[in-house]
Length: 153
Image (tube, rainbow, N blue to C red; front, side):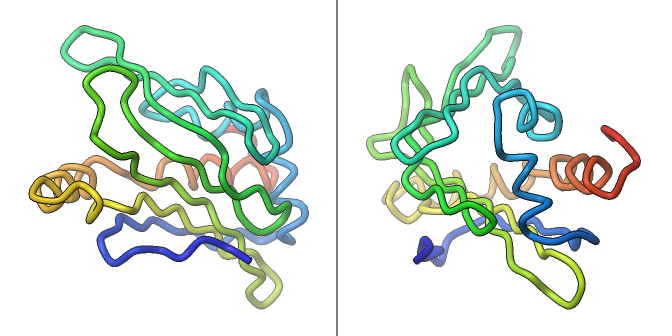
């Protein structure tokens, strides 16, 4: 039925001129997700099914760091949610990443949420602020360009 988005979250969104079913095609395989979601980080693993894994990596201070987790919600044309934690020196509990698709007019409203920061206790505020400034809409702009026919952004 969808993931409840917690109070402490980062949100980015885009309105894409296509159906939710068409947008979801870009979630259907590793190659298709990597074409737009690998912006600012690299998609390493994507197993598009409930219980599958999402693995990403990013270079920080010249060192490659890996993060990701298990797919908790996989509802085609509606939602992909996975746990998110650093593989080394991670948080005590993971945060969550949710990509939600909602039909709106003749289009699809795509939202990206990074949420669950309140689970980090005293570190929640500083961690949220860091991610708020770190997330861009580049992923969703690339998805929009692919779906609307302009190719990868």
